[in-house]
Amino acid sequence: MQTTHDNTRWYDRIWSSLIFFTRIPFWRLHQPPKECYRTVVEHWPLTGWITGGAMAATLYFGSWVLPYPVAVLLAIVVRLFVTGALHEDGLADFFDGFGGGGNDRNRILAIMKDSHIGTYGVLGLIFYQLLLAATLISLPPTLAAITILAADPFSKMLTALLIMVMPYARREEEAKAKVIYRKMNWVAGVGLAIQGLLPMVAYLYLTHLSWAMVLFIPCIVMFLLYMFIWNKLRGYTGDCCGAVCLILELVVYLVVCALNFSPASHPLLLTL
Image (tube, rainbow, N blue to C red):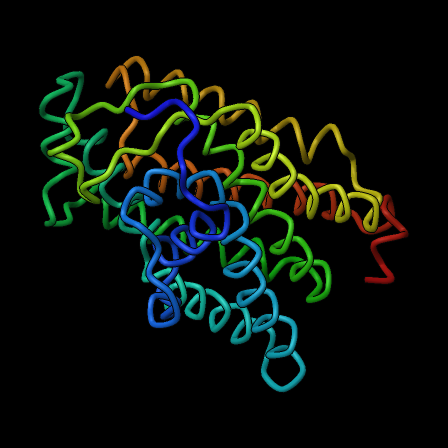
């Protein structure tokens, strides 16, 4: 696995991340070198600015002309199209693997690699999407939209830490994407933090929500998921990354819902 500096150009690394994590045809405009795809996680939160922006814009402007629940569901559909349901596929495999594999590491990995979806995957996706829709519907449109803008990059930034602290659980030739992400150096780590934290810091400053709750509860959940995956697999997979990303994003929405549950205790939120 590559752990040192390489000769790839910064814009090629960004371009490869946009191509890898979205279904927007960036590849028609430019094809970065193949080795850049080892670095895609380093700019994963930046792609969240696009996927979160598309989802937030659909929700906010859709609420002007459609019933709000319809706008929320349409926003979720838009993100599925933009990402190609990449992370949702990982979430389904995650639930199938850990739900049906017991404590057998090899069986868990085999189930996650299987392209067929099982009972755990179906139920996991259903309940995830129901919770996602319910939490967004429970928030005012403006607050929901800016929460998406902050939560999407932030959850991707936290999930990228898995790559920094764990080895890959399979051999490279067994990887679904046929590539293993490289370990990040300190420069890439700082860039990752800026991409993920900048929207979140702006969001917390704007909403005056509890920094401790919105920042640290997802971090605690991230640590628990890390321990769970490490105890089961002794490493990460792409499916684990996709699942953890979605779970952490949902945790942010749940925390904001809890903080916004009693509007009288948060008068500043009433203006959003």
